[in-house]
Image 1 (cartoon, rainbow, N blue to C red):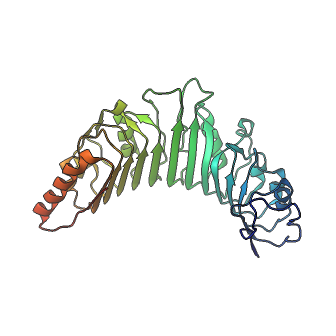
Image 2 (tube, one colour):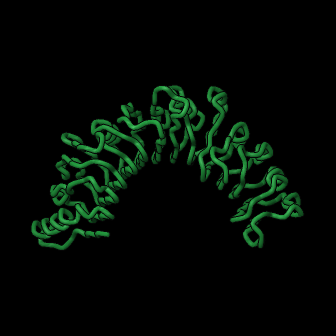
Image 3 (spheres, helix red, strand yellow):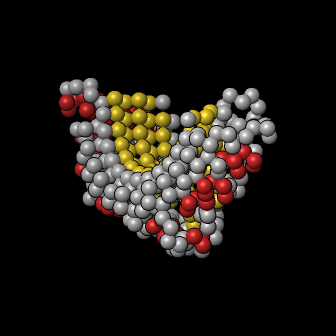
Length: 331
């Protein structure tokens, strides 16, 4: 049994609307309608729910949600920052997928409790502190495959990147860092699980060595995306003697660095796509990218200083192979 309330003509669900007569409901999806507190509490009566997608404006998940013992998918569009998940979340033993549009968090006091969500494979937009013990929270989600989190440095004197190697089934991670008082290069000691296939990093100021370390420690990495990142204080990305053995996709969005020291066919032996957006400091794309036999496309957005080097790479590939095989797009 499914229920879609998107047909309601107003932006706020009327107080006369109740869910208590829909106790057999298995899926509830609400779009563009603000639910009243009464309706949110009544959702807890729908114990057969497997999928719940709702908008809300709350500081925490309603306690009544603890009754949703069959819930597998929870997607919340919350119109307040930092939705507190605990203690409600620990009762949802069958939960597999959880995504919050804003940030979400758990109480620090919950970290050392024994309860685990063994079935949870997707968790997005978790907000965690930069304290050294923050990685302990991930032990509560031992089977995660997809993780998105934001590092909060507001209460930390020293910044730590959490140990993710406790998640030995993790395949995709998106880590963002926001700290208005922090401008120095981050000396993070990354501990990623070797199972990772996709990594996105947003807002970090990293050294060349830190980025190179990702290549050395992740033999299965297939996709790397850097967003709003500064490399070596905006200077050089040196990739000598660094190989991303299985990387197929490299995307750089608003990445600050001027020189790229790389022998591309050695560092990216099976790369298929390179995408660069808003990298206005980068002087040129090294011609050695033309030596990557697997490379199918180079896409450049809003970085006009790179146009000439992209065209030269395309001409070089055509000259060396006798084929017009490299697709180039410039916007």
